[in-house]
Structure formats: C-alpha cells, structure tokens
Length: 344
Length: 287
Image 1 (cartoon, helix red, strand yellow):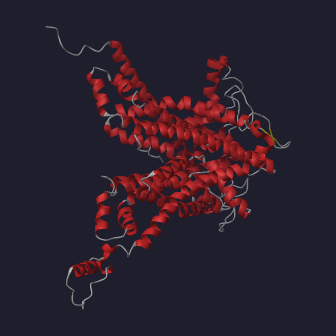
Image 2 (cartoon, each protein chain N blue to C red; image 1 turned 180 degrees about the vertical axis):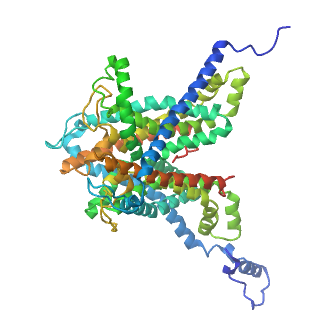
Image 3 (tube, rainbow over the protein chains, first blue to last red; image 1 turned 30 degrees about the horizontal axis):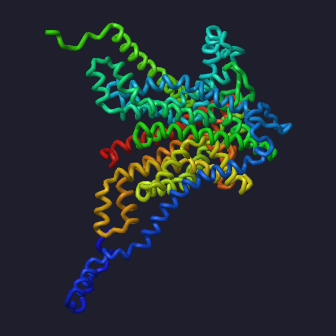
C-alpha cells in the first residue's frame, strides 16, 4: 500500500487550539489510520466472506449426506435392514440385496491390506532408518509417483499385464501349493478377486508407506540413541525404539489405506469380473460396492433400482467416513496435531 | 576389577539384523517393480500410437483404423477448467479462514470436515453431482463433471493453503497492521502473497489428484465420441475414454487406450514435477 492512498494533512489548517482538548484533535489528524474507521466495513465483509468459505466446506459434507439419504429413501422403505443381508441382486424382478457387493469390497480390501502392509512398512523403515541420505529423497519421490498414477491407468495395466501374469504363472502356482485351503481353487481366469486385491495393494502402498514414514520421522531421535546406547543392533533399535513408539500412527496409516481401498473404483471394476456372487475362492470373479455403482448407475432404469444403488453409495460413504475418522485420530495422536500431509 | 564394556553382539542377533535389512531392501524392490513395469509398458505401448491424428482427430467408428482422442483431451481440459474455477477460490478461501480466522473451535470443525471430505470415495461424489446438476439439467454435462471434481479439490486446497499461510511469520502481518494496512488487505497482499508458491503447490496437487479421476465423471460428464463445445451437453474426458477403450474387445482401441494413458500420465507427472521444483526453488524453500 503506497502512501499516496493516505489522506494528507490539510495545509491551511486552522490555528491550533490550546489545552488538552486541542492535543487530542491534532493527534487524530496526524494519524488518521489509527482511528480504524476507514477499513471496518471491507474488513468485516472480507472476514465474513472467508467464514462463508469455511461454512461451505461443512455444507458440502451436509449436501453429500442429504443427497444420499434422500436418494436412498425409496430403497430403504422397500427393504430396510434386509438390504444389507440379502444376496439377491435382480433388476428384472426389482429385488435388491447388497451382500455380494459388501462381501466383495471387504474381501478385496482386506486382501489388499495383507499384501500391502508388510511391503509398505518395509519401504517406510528402509527410507527413514536404513537408506543413505542421498537416496532418501529419490526413493520417497518414486514411491509417491505411484500415488500420482490415475486409477484408470492402473486398471489398464492390470487388464493387459497383471491379469495375464496372474493367470499364467501365479494362479497355477497358488492352486498347486495352497489349493487345499479352498481359497485358491477353481479355474484360473486371471480376472477376479485376487487380481482386484493385488492391484488395490499396489495402489495403497504409497499412502500407507508415506504416512508411516511421516510417523516414523516424528519418533524422537533420543529413543533411537537410547536403544543404540544399550547395545541394540540396528534392527533391534528399529523394533524397540522406533516401531513400538509409532505403533498407533502406523495402525492409523494402515486404516487410511483401507479407507482408500474401500472406495477405489476404476481399477477394481476393470479386473474383478463384476459378478454379484459370493465365492470362497479368490480366483472367482466378484463385485464391489464402488464397481456396481460405476457399472450400473447410468443404466439404472427404475426408480427403485436407482435408489438401491444410491443406498449402496450411502453405505460406502458411511463406512469410509468412519474408517477415515478413526485413522486420522490415530495418526494425529502420534504426530501431535500435525495433520498427515495429503499426498498427490 | 571386572571388565566394563559392551558385550559382543551374538551371532543370532547379527544375523537377524542383516536378514531384516535384506527384507527391507527386498520390499523396496518389490514396490518399485510395478512402478517401473507400469511406466515401461505405458511408454512401450503408448509411444507408437501417439501421432498427429491421435492428437487432432475424434474417435473413428469400430473397425476403422485411425482416429484419436482430441475431443477427449479438450473435454478433460474444459472439465478441469470448470472444476478449478469453482474449487480453487473456494478452497483458498476456506484455507484463509482456517489460518486467519479459524484458530478456534469452529476452525477445528472445518478442519476435521475437510479431512473427512478428503476420504469420501470419488464415486460417491459423482452420485452427489449427479443429483445436484444432472437431475436438474436433465442431461449429462461438463458442468456436472466440473462440480464433482471441484468438490474433490476443495479439501486438499483448503488444508495446504492453511498450512502455507501458517508458515508466514506473524511479524509480517503485524508489520502491515502497524503501517495501518487493513486486515483484509494484509491477508490478500501480504500473507497470501508471501505464501504464493506454497498455495500454488497445493492447488497443483489437488489438480493432479483430480486430473485422472474417472469414477465421478462416469455419470456426470458421461463421455462423448464427438466434439462438443457446450457446457450442458455430455462431454468426453481422457480418463473416460481410456476406460471405455480398455474394456472394449478391439485391439485398435486397446492401442489407443495406452496412448491416452501415456498422454494423461505425461500431463500429471509434469504437473507433479513442476510442483516439486517449485517447492525446492520457491520462496518457501527455507520455511
């Protein structure tokens, strides 16, 4: 702000009055900005405009809930709680049950966690505790690049590369070695629950590992030094001094990854097979809540059909909200209010 | 006099130490493998298919070779433009609220809500945009797609803007107040201006995050095989086109899907790299 904007003191000012009253007047004239009257209205306006932006964020969440609840009333009145317990999904006879989708979402996400958690922890530990400082930046950048790849590109890659590899090599191997468990039986299509779990795992590794990394970096240095001073090897130092202290945060990071996996749509839709069935074998095709929305929402003809789909969306929304809130709290408890930096 | 010192580390502990180091290295290799595989295949499959026709033509009917995704590339830009127009001012405003007016209970609520919003699955946001825009307008549109992506951008921008504004030293604000500059002017011309590069980083991150989004566009922008210049008509998007082509049974379309994916990735990765460079060399590098 330049000085020119300020009102200049009048040149032909009247003769100053004498006494205490006069001094006050002069003060007011020489420092007009201290009166504070000039800027009150724009300031108040700006303040309220910014508060409005803040309120809008809350309103957005309200809007989401409102839209989903209103949209799903029809289905809720028709099926009630049974909606989540029935496995019959038949648009022709207007029968809708969400169980196969819930099952598919849960199983594919858990499978993704089983694969992703050990890998992400390994990466995070390596980057923060073991790797040379020069390599650290490059490695964390590269793993975060994984997070920058759009879901649909993962799906594309999964269809043409991952699925054939699973079908030709991984599934026959699993069938011969672990087929007796019943989890790995049936014809190896490639496409199916296993493929969905693997691609989801690849997608959530960057999230889990980068948040774990942040949690590990806030573990106080003296914990490490104390462990080393007691004669611990590096691994013992990591296990006792670092991982144990960061436990809550790591669990939070894992749950955050779970939240992402639950809502992930495109890549899963492209490889899971999209069949609303509950099968024990991971080789069998399945269906998730997000992918049934992706596939059938635009084709939903009847009101009840659309409403049932929106109710699935509502259920998905609530599950991810709860999972995310839980995870945030756990990460916050370790990083002490410093919110986990959102990644690309 | 008993000897004081560190007892030798037993063989078992040393072996465990080395094994765990090896395991950590192995996990890094296992994680980097798909990354390299994805990029390698993208370049290998995509590069041969990117040509002038791909970048300037609309899709050809099934069976005819050639054609491109020009309308989808432009459509994506239109949708992202609408999303930025709606989402960026709102996000920055919410960020200013959080850092300048929201150091209290109300700010905490907004902070928590925006973190929650960040975790809402993108497909659910698509449903909301469908109800808000498509149901009212009675047809799919670029506007609906833009609204959906804008909702996704707001929380990310708000939180990064807040963090960047908080990095600006309080003394700078006080100096402005001391010169008699009003609060709104201080916030916009002093605080926000000081944090510009950081705020831009946040905007770019949000942009990169939604640039490849497909799920919320499925039933908002819907996709289109032809040119469309109206914001209230179904609009093609690069990510939608990739999806449609990838699940189709035609080799020619598969080829184009790879090319589209490569174009999309190049756009996004260059945005992310620009952000990295901006952060490293920006005014906030030392903050």
